[in-house]
Image (cartoon, rainbow, N blue to C red; front, side, top):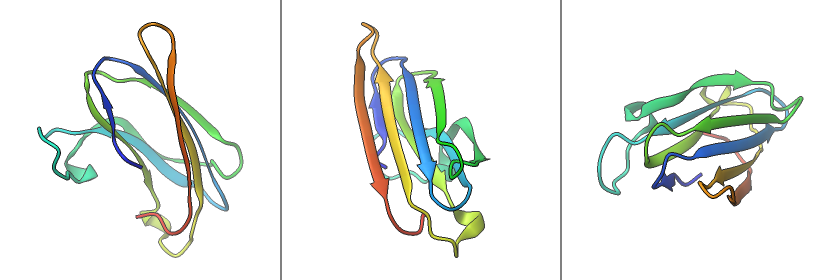
Length: 113
C-alpha cells in the first residue's frame, strides 16, 4: 500500500481482512524528510504491530494521527512466509469539516513481505 500523506491531524479508519490465517498489522510514520524510501523498521511506530484474526472476522481500527506527516499501514506476514494470504482493506480519512476522504481500498494477492 502506498503511504498516506496527511497535512492535518486527522482520524484514520481502516478495515481489513485476510483469507486463511492471522495477519500482523501496524501503522508507522516517516522520520526522514523528503520523498526517498524509508524502511518500516526505521519509522516511528504509531500503532504497534499485532496479530489479528482477520481471517475469521474483518478488523476495524481507528487512529488519530499524532502529527501531520506520511503514514504507512503495514501488513506483515514474516512469521508465516510459506503461507500465502490475500488481504482486503479500506482506509477512510475523516476531514476536519466532517467529510470522509476515501475510501482507499485494494485487494492484494500473493505473499506479503
